[in-house]
Image (tube, rainbow, N blue to C red; front, side, top):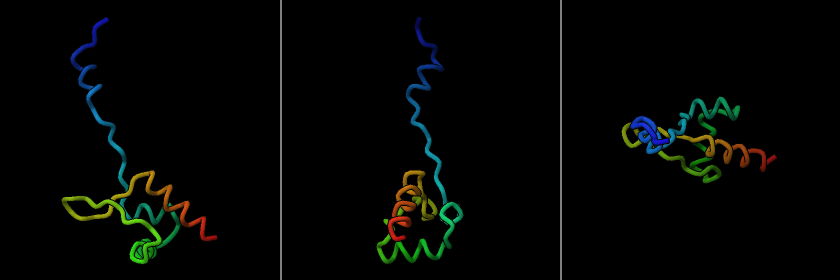
Length: 75
């Protein structure tokens, strides 16, 4: 059975990954935004990707998992 044009188009789409801002990440991790920025500056946390248009930090779910592991490692 041959695919329709719409089915071919969906094969070419790249899945969109949700991006989280620093406030959302701080809420998820239970720490202040300032703590995240401080840990980045001290190189405890890796620097996140930034939105090329507005320069805001953008975190993926994988980034948040890394930050969680770093936080639990220190306890």
